[in-house]
Image (cartoon, rainbow, N blue to C red; front, side, top):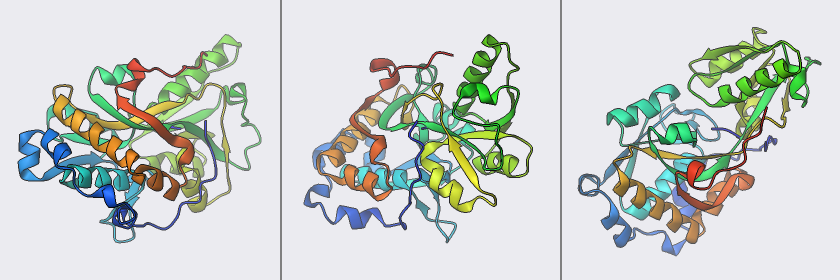
Length: 297
């Protein structure tokens, strides 16, 4: 997950991906792509994808508390249409996504999961976008700034299992290198719980996805400010499958590239005001095959 592009994103009202697809004649099922799928998925005509649908604009539940909306549901539905299959999405806790794929409970997971060398030892990534994170603090907090050293000695929080914790660890390293106290970090099982810790004053700042800025500011009970610093990396994010599911990974990547070629991908990212997170050269396990620079503490 996870995004130096902390902008105020004005999220548009949810629109079904079919409305986007209707604009592209080439959107119909591609029989060659369908033939690339593993036999069991192709015959069933359904692919189950696990997610944590509490993280707009990646994905969240609509007002009916059943329909998933976000740029990733639009994307997985568009890819599914290209592959000639339906997508069955199920929501679970974020820290259960990769273990669920590893165990075979879910054939695929997608929830703005950031690619890393460590995670590639567990699962295979089909990278579809960039991501970066941001620091969120109450506007009344005059201590926090874009200087990482302004955070030294403060209390922070992040969601369990996310690599926001890696950024917090890097901040602590820099603090200690400069003779300052490190961070006290609390982990919570959900993004909502992380934000509640901020609103209630239990922590001074939190780490979350930069792409969620507009939604967080819209729903925050108190004014929020957003910060970045030079320790926040730019990352790849993508779908994950088991390493032995190369056929599924290749078929999914082919479907992803097909929606890029016909313009659907661009339409989806534009709809959710995420043009700066577009990844032109999508691929597999890009964190190791095409690594991005990692900021040094």
